Length: 224
Image (tube, rainbow, N blue to C red; front, side, top):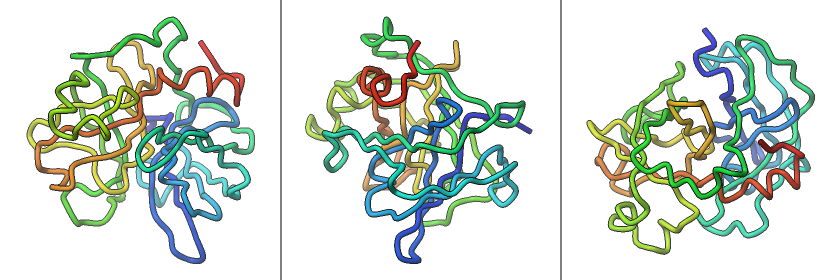
């Protein structure tokens, strides 16, 4: 229980169509997720303290008025959004994850080990899974990532990880956390994978949180 107390499941709804993403609790009233998750959604249901997403500790549903997408967001660039939530008390199952400090904004985290988590599909084309999955991944250089995705997709605003053994983020993991193994800091928000699929061994792309610390501070007052 409580293996990843800072993750929330995010079920998004537009006129009865729904899709699934992840998010990270960064404060008592704030969740950080991917902007592309919130695009077109009328509301979001947030599942807190869940291992099996059918059995969260509790849920909150918020309307799209509570979504704050990064102003420069377009396509997969600046793929970051905040969701304002009702006040949540922290306990062993539900807790925040710390952001990197403002002093760390130039840290590339290259070669650092990190942990990604989510309820996304475990193989290409399958549905989201009921039980939370966690995978250890290694951060690679921006240039290595650009070798796969080109400079338009793999900008300096992206942090990429190696996916050995075909273990990667997949459909339904978007918006979820990438957290350093050492020091437990939220350094990435799941953004994109290869069109060749999650098991292709291609790097997975995350929005680089350190590039947005000032914006998060402005909107939420949260900084370290």
